[in-house]
Image 1 (cartoon, helix red, strand yellow):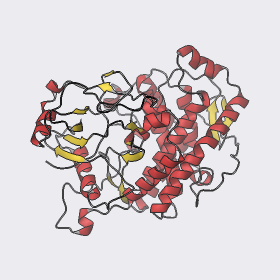
Image 2: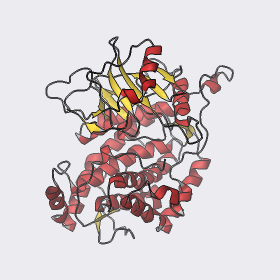
Image 3: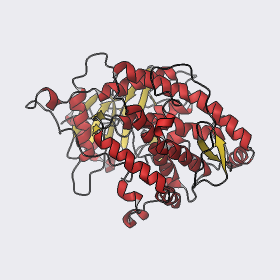
Image 4: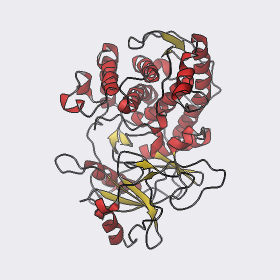
Length: 457
């Protein structure tokens, strides 16, 4: 039995919302999105682990799952313990790199002082052979994706997120403190897999069958843009010479949980020694991706295809500019609050903010590739995200101040309106902060908070 951290699973079918598996939320609390989990008869290793840990097997009543790419189960055991269990896939060669990275995080995190800003669900045990881990369930907790979707991922939570990520970047390792006392697998020092540089030249034929036509079109946007390809190579080169720290390397809203007003960070399968700008840039990129969708659906997710078309076709150039400026004014203070929390807990290196902007640019491409998974045609809003990502990648230094990643948080200056053409987005309309948006309709599309990772894995 060893160690890890939490959330997400492979959903099969949505179930009734309104409370999580263990305790009901307040009557006026937002509904919680949960799913029916994979049958435990097909995963006997789950209850086997729980029994070995002395927790009792899962009681079948009320068993649910969180959304995500890995199978998981959330519920109460026969001994009354509230537990979350997840599995991860093994590599083709039979190794378990994701479990090993998560265990390396747990070994490092075990030395956090009491009251650390970096909170994670309590790890109860791991069966490395079957790649299954168990954690204490946080009853009534909500995914950061759900919280962002409701508009409740406010500046206070963003500041806490910044403090948590900065604390992660200052974690020591067992080897640092005592080379002979290291517990669990060693910290991964290999290069993070995204962006996959060989895919910038050509899309592997072996991967084509697993990609939608929209995803292939999204990769073509990247491959055909020689300036973006060059910018990604420059970003990788800067990363190789940057200071490295323990880093999450897969940071998204759905890796956070909010429980009893406190923020928890989860899912450590990509944890490794890496450029801390990756995590900062990913958090910034999440807000910018959210902002892109909000331009076309400012009052929330469209409720029907008819509504979605109306939201797009009825937007004039001036309306797109106006909405874009309003959305950025709304979201940039949250980015600033994150940066404030980060700098309260860690002094960044002088170039971290600029590298983070570059990684935010890549994050937008990564998210548009992910959201294209279920579509045959690349959505125009996804193309708008590519326009923002392109702007950030080509001129990261020019966006540091606009995104308020320079110095302490201050009252934001007026958001500039600059024309920046995007070769992959015809009929581009000028929007705030040098971002080009297509003046075209917004077709029905999953909310960005619900999108899976754009990882090639």
